[in-house]
Image (cartoon, rainbow, N blue to C red; front, side, top):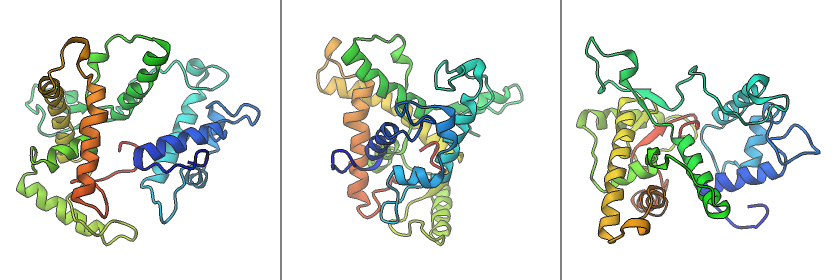
Length: 280
C-alpha cells in the first residue's frame, strides 16, 4: 500500500490498490471530483494506467490485464446510457436487460433431452457480483445497521480457493481422461513465454465443462460444509456462523493456505484456469 506501507497479497492486494486508485481519482473524469466513478474516467483508463495503479510489474505479474481494462471500458460505455444512469454517467440504477449472460455457462452434464429448453443447460454463478454483495453488506449492516432481505439466497462463492479446498483435501477428484487432457493443456501452455512451468496442474479454460462442474460442486459442498461447521462448533440460533463468515475465515482461507503448502512456488490452485481476469 502506498498509503500505509503495508504489504497485501492477491485479492486483498487488488482490493487495497483499487481503493487507492479510487482515492487518487483514476476512475473519475473530473479532476476536481476525484472521489467518484463515471464514464469519462473509465473510458480514459488505459492498460498501462491500470497496471501502474495495481502495481503490476515483472516481479509482481497479474494475469488478464487487457481483459480487466476492457471490462472497465465497457462499463464506461454502458454508463453513458442516460436513460439508466442519468446525465452524470455514474453507476446507479443497475438494471440488466438480458443481453449478456455474465458469469453463467453451458454445461453438457445438464439436461439435453429433446424437450429441454436451450437455457436449461446453463449454470449461473455470478461470483464477482455476489462477492461484491457480501463485501458491501457486512460494513453496511455493522456500521449503519442496514438490514438486508433475502441474504439466504446468496450462494457460496464458486472460485478457485473454495473449490481448491475440495480438491486438495481429496473430496473432489478429476476423471482420469479429464486429468490427462488438463495436464496436456498445461504442458502446451507452459511453452508460452511468461506462463507457469513448474508445479504442474491440469489446465482448463473458464468455459470448459470441468470448470463449470467444479464450480457447481463447490456451491453444493459449501452449503453442506456450512451446516457441518456450525454443528461441530455447537453453534445455534443467533450464534451460528453465517455462510459469508464460514467462507472468509474457513473455506476461502483454508483453500489458500493449502495451495501455499501444496504448491509453495506458485501458490496456485490445484486446477489452473485460463482466464482473461474477468471471472477469476
